[in-house]
Length: 178
Image (cartoon, rainbow, N blue to C red; front, top):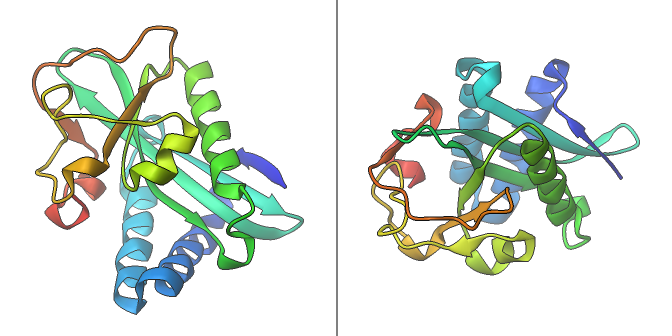
């Protein structure tokens, strides 16, 4: 399995991976929504505000993750991991966890201080994310599943409370994702 940064020639293939993966696990409607989200993230988010990583097995796309910028009033450099997809053929083999670790290590090397995600605490805790109260860090929008708000420091310093709200990129700035 090879883990690399996103190649801009693969936008359609990446959106298709997300669509197929979410259709397989959540149904066709969710697959379409997440496929469209990835297309919008890739087409509307500037390169300084979006990191995409892929896992490949030979010439087959096995997985992809996206990190987009979260902007805080304090100037902290932070990104949110969303969405994550591993092709059904490669699930339950550790591909997603290895890909996320690769992405987090790359972000840390680029000076990113904090990483957040919104998802299953049982899954994301395996790669260092911890549940957060919104008293510690407020999410960009109202959360329908507050237990899923997770974060971690990518520096030697522990994640400290951050006052004020943060903002996400426009593609993620929709209530249905939160």
